[in-house]
Image (cartoon, rainbow, N blue to C red):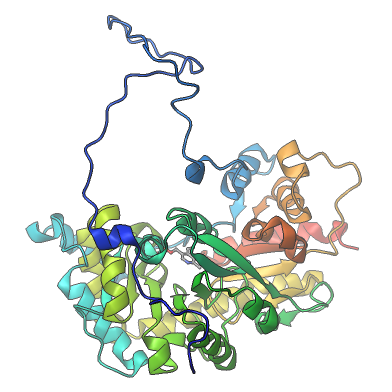
Length: 474
Ligand SMILES: Cc1ncc(COP(=O)(O)O)c(C=O)c1O
């Protein structure tokens, strides 16, 4: 597969990483904004600004964020709902603890002097080795823990490090819609430009339960989004929020385009242990794909410990070393005791059959929860992996004149559905148009995303409450 568009090295890291930027001392600022209320410190002399500045505290555009984010809208709606407490099926955190072998390892690690100090910036040797050992069979080769694995503070910081390591201002990155929302700011931090390519749901998704596999890529749209500035593409399989596991054939076609146009692939595989159909890792399809792919995964998702913030990347040395370089500058190293605990958890997981149990348990939660949609005749997109399910609520009629607050009223229908569900039946879900550009939001405005990684009694309570929707279904 020849490289066509890109003549320069696609793997050239961003210049800041290459230069080993020095850390500048913080500059103290004595100017105050006259626009802000002044806080009074008793007995402390007031200092006044000597230079006029329009708004010295104006945040950088990359963090200013104009729109209220979905998490705060949902939390606010939940707090204001007459039904209390809300059953929260919104955010993808687990409603139960990590397995005992992981928890015990974390407790033991806290008692060890070395585990309470800085870890090497690329990660603790024991964890890198445990990951190399765990993943070598999937990759069909022996991974080198020192050069092909790097530990990060959750998959999210791993992806930020990947973009920081390779994206220069003006470089373009392709992502599929719907997307995991953090991709956007992670790409914007190094001033990358995003090109969006939508996944297309089945046309009759409002009337028929379908497979998440039926969300498809239009390959012409994908190739049209590639141009000489394109440097990376982000894949996510199993996919959040769709639950799609990209088929081998789809990954081969994507891979061909990436080789042809000489792109780096960032393959977000944080749900790699939760698949209900055969799961293929794009990096394993050919040596050409391995050499251009960074696979990112998450111990938080694997061991039900999203708060541990342990993630990792696997890839060839010529990519990993620059991701690790960016990671060093972002946070130096990641939480030591929980890295050690993750290492031990990986060492033990296979022996106790954890991966099979974990997959079977999540699949049964999914089936248990989706029964309510069958009962109500609400079609859903049956997930092939992960722990999210998209239900199509086109048949739920919102009462005429129902009062929504302005910040909900001016968003697509799924935001109104979300508000309505919280207030009328006391179940929180996530409106998936949050994971779309405005131009493509219409694709998902009848859907809501539910996270099933909750205890079974919580799932049953949610189901009982959702039965309250019956009177609104037409
Ligand atoms: C698709 C996807 N990628 C990455 C992440 C972040 O993983 P971590 O919690 O390890 O940062 C999430 C978390 O929800 C996710 O859904």
